[in-house]
Image (tube, rainbow, N blue to C red; front, side, top):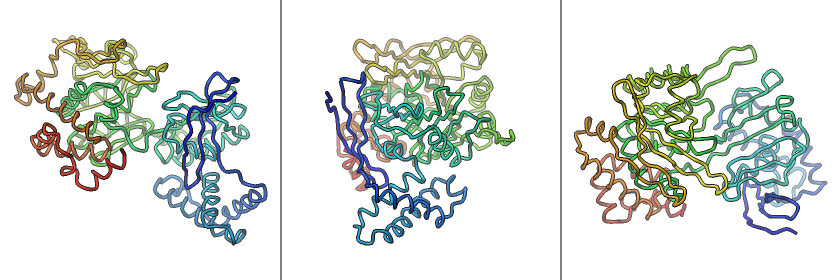
Length: 509
């Protein structure tokens, strides 16, 4: 017996497909079924011939695969040429049908086949190929892990997809290099392994990133944290305090960074450093992203995270972002950067603030506590797998006394009430902000209260697109009183945002 849970349509390069999520008596988890238009055997034979002709008449260079903007042009070139060739075979076919067939050819020849289709599903977070004998698995935002009805033909097809992805970013996967971390032109992260390293067969894991980046309002609506915590982090970033976001795998560390970093004033330069590009920041920020690179088959050309961090200090950054701290040298360079006057933000694996503290000060990282005192805040993220939610479980400050440091938990998540509660007073953060701004504790708390009012106003008026949030924050840094007055009076944001950005809000709603 089969019971449909949800149905919706997806589109990829003008190719439409229907997704059905269903429960059956024979499977322990729901199924994710991709239904696309069937193509007759006769037309398929013609399409195979068109593929052969396209390869001959549309020459491609390496640059066209590596540069994302140029690659989009390649897709357009392929599609238009495919339509011309189809015109020869099917002169009476409707224009819409020719475009549908041509776009399908583009997905097959320059993309990842059926995987290309489900990559366009905004409800998916992860797409996983374990081997050709198993169906592709997906992680759905509402239904968690699901089995699909999509199979790849053989291990060679999986290997070919991995190789194609690698070529686009100047990497390769082979018996000498059986592991690969790369990214698609869309920004989605790809990990691939090949047999015999993965003993079942070749694998591909694609972690999708939102085409429309998360904003602080999305996190508030999802109850990831409270407006009080959001306002407190806004204050910390405004006054250039250093923050580390920790948590387990897929707990939302990088997403949290992407959500709070737009609180940086738009006139400051940001340099981000990552092994694989994950951080997405809005266009209104002055941002330069850097990514490390592995060595070529001859063992040359490697650019490490450490190389990038040392170089970034010569690029006059106001703020430095390190995608993930894994090694002692990376931690040392980051904290030296802080010591030389740069504000820094990073992610780190650790399930509690005190665990982060211990990992940083013990082997193998072994940072001196005097050095760790440069870090102001630790924000801990948690993914509740059973409920399918992500929460900020702790916000803690590092308090320094002489050469010793300790962790002061300010906010902690209560699992029973699903609320984040303030459990301790703030000490160091208020003292440092007061020292550099001249504000009293009462004035700082009033500033946080005003930020809460602004965030509440933004939520009420659904100001949550990247550009609209960016505009409000930019206006806030230009004229703080104007934005506070608008929020307190609960006036329409149309006058501040203008017709275009206000239209974005209406459309996204």
